[in-house]
Length: 59
Image 1 (cartoon, rainbow, N blue to C red):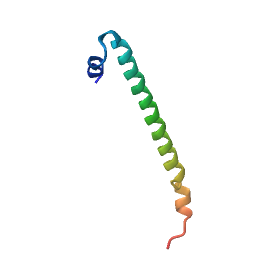
Image 2 (spheres, rainbow, N blue to C red):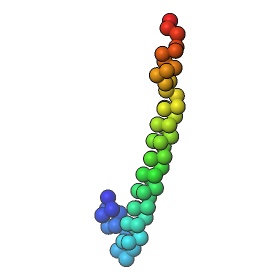
Image 3 (cartoon, one colour):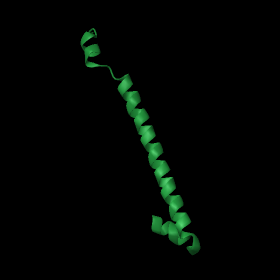
Image 4 (cartoon, one colour):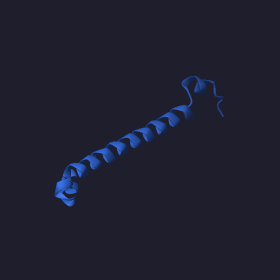
């Protein structure tokens, strides 16, 4: 993908286009990591503990 981006841009600005690509890729990874951390934290907080399941009445 960086090759396609570098070839699409002006040859004198290849460094700028690849740096922009790298920064956007890094930002996307950071956002995705934050979203996954929030999802995991929410699911862990919503899950009942073993002790709570043992005390729950049946029926």
